Length: 298
Image (tube, rainbow, N blue to C red; front, side, top):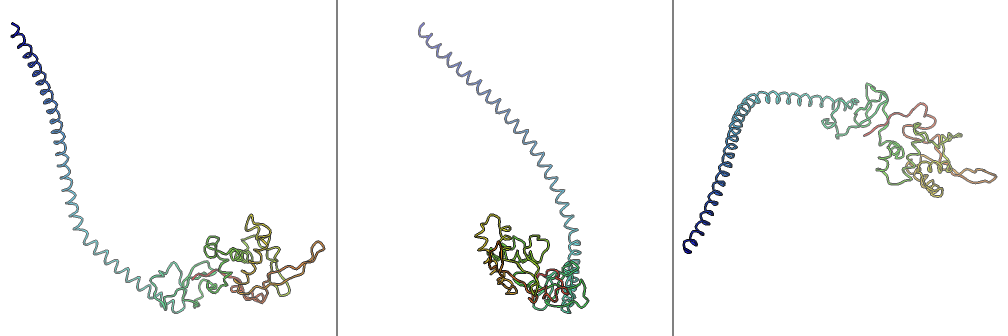
């Protein structure tokens, strides 16, 4: 009896284990079948999309063929137009070059500088008193006198005049010397009423204008905020040296005895004499007959 009982016990446990394993396999099969069905559905959708894409590609390919068929005539017309434009441009450039060589002044807006073939390849850009920009060959006068008088070329100006025409940024980029920049600003204050802060005084007895060292010192302190009185005095001497150098000695220095508070002292003055020849201004005797004209750039 004990032997049969012992045999039935393990058989029952084995049977139950097999039953559990079978149920697990069935559940696994159901999961795989569900996954497979989902994949088949997704595959069907992808195949449909692929077919639609192929159809669209076929339509696009047909459209490309149509466009390529029409491109050739259009390109041919464009090539013809381009050749005609280039030929006209060459003819205009040749005519402009001939006119320039005859002394003509042509409006800047009408000239392609890179396409003009003139002697030495040199064109000069100028301003006239009509406010327009023109091109000409260097130093050539317009026989038709269009646009009014021509100003001096930039290279004809004194270095001090050239610097005075620059804005602050360009001035700093051109020279690192503070006295030179101050000299340029001082000259600009003399010639440009728009500057406002002008320490120059009208002269007499052969002196067109002058500025005294003391006035220059105060002016420098107004230009360079925060500098000491002692440093401003040093800058006065250096600025005067720069004025003489950059004006190519068109300016003069004179020492004048002054009396203040009962004390007598000698003060330097920077003088622009009546007979000093300044490009664009002439001399004092001819200044009224030769007003300053607009700037000229090369």
